[in-house]
Image 1: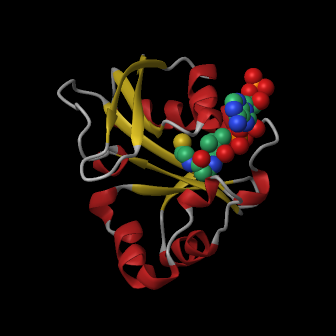
Image 2: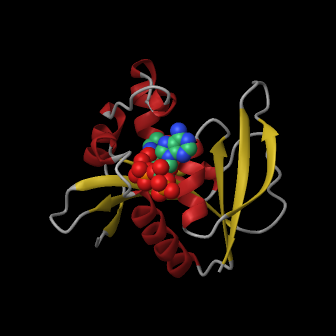
Image 3: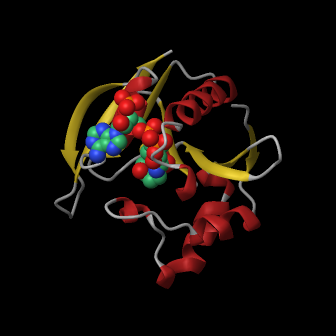
Length: 159
Ligand SMILES: CC(C)(COP(=O)(O)OP(=O)(O)OC[C@H]1O[C@@H](n2cnc3c(N)ncnc32)[C@H](O)[C@@H]1OP(=O)(O)O)[C@@H](O)C(=O)NCCC(=O)NCCS
């Protein structure tokens, strides 16, 4: 699978905001009531979102490198490149995840010269944990997101 990356543009963001995952992954659906704020967030260069495009330049997913990948309450003292990622809903659950994750890690490491990468994943999302495990990440901790009862795990990959 070959992908290219492009800074996320408004058209990409508008598509992503409409993506709908089925339960329990609807947790990741953007809220229709906050579309304008979410759009600004996705295209703000400070949040370093990229579109993941296939060879036909079609949007297959997105990723972020940096603070977007952190969750309030986690321990981020160690220096590492935080990665966030989401695949298009019609592509999930078919065994492709590791290919996207591997490609995103490779791109992030090259682009940001990272020695370590980190992902923060909702505890319930065993599918996502499995994918990051498959590309070499190891769980190093867990915590409850500040102000909620949602549990998260932190996973690290050493380059
Ligand atoms: C998270 C994501 C990258 C995973 O990719 P995917 O292509 O859907 O996952 P796969 O189909 O490759 O499944 C990965 C593994 O999880 C396993 N799995 C699936 N559902 C599972 C479950 N409920 N419990 C445990 N393992 C599960 C699969 O069997 C597979 O393991 P295997 O290769 O050993 O058989 C993708 O679903 C996505 O981008 N989702 C968007 C929403 C989201 O979850 N965001 C979190 C971002 S990291």
